[in-house]
Amino acid sequence: MGITIIMPALNEERNIEKAVSNSLRALADYGIDGEVLVINDGSRDATQAKVEAIRATGAPVSLLNHEKPWGFGASFWDGVDHAQKDVVVVMPGDNENDPWEILRYAALLDHVDIVIPFVFNKKVRSLFRRVLSVVYRTVINLTFKTNLNYTNGTILYRRSILTDLPYRSGSFFFQTDILIRLLNSGYLFAEVPYRLDQRKDGVSKAVSFPSFVKVVKGYLKLIKDQYGHQEEVKPLRAETMTASRHTRTNEKFET
Image (cartoon, rainbow, N blue to C red; front, side):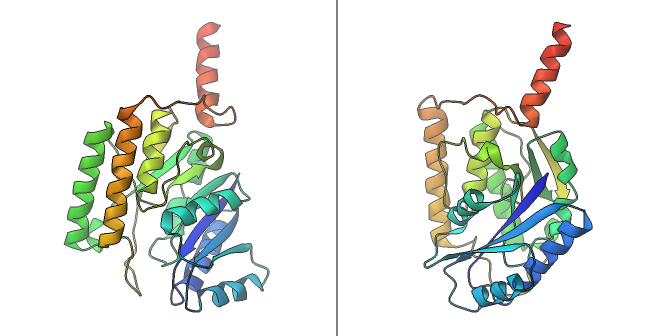
């Protein structure tokens, strides 16, 4: 099993080198066959040059350049389309997330198809961000009848299950959109505790009025798709652990 770390970056010249090097070290420490795929999302600083310097060393790092910003969600999907490994995870180029924290759970993909982290050291974030997270989680769980702890983290996905999704959100709502659709399709998941690091440089782009507007639009779109009409649910992909475990269960009761 290999893992592609998809790393969207917009003007992250102060953080991108550390984010990439940490990701490569974490992959090596856990003995994972992996790559880092940086999505330079229209940066106007030295982000591209710094990534190209890393690639020149022969490290397993790929680079996709967008002339203009596509947005975080759209950059993730571009990464999914170009990933070379069976599993994908998004790791922002701001170096806020610790790759060791999520990659330690890679072995769970021998049992499930999605690994969802939730932050246990919540005080690393401001009170405003914590309150916002509680409100967001409550709204999502009540609306879509789930009981998830967190839906916007560094989630491990088996890449093949993403290709069947009928819609690709391009906003910061994309992770929630993906999870609700995949869970409704029946794919198995595990939730795991995750430590979040304090952001060292720059300002997060996730909390802004334009991002909020896009999230609301994505939320309303998902409501329409889930409740407005009967969305086609495709059969479970045969190569997934979910399908494998269903097959074993059926065989057990048939014998």
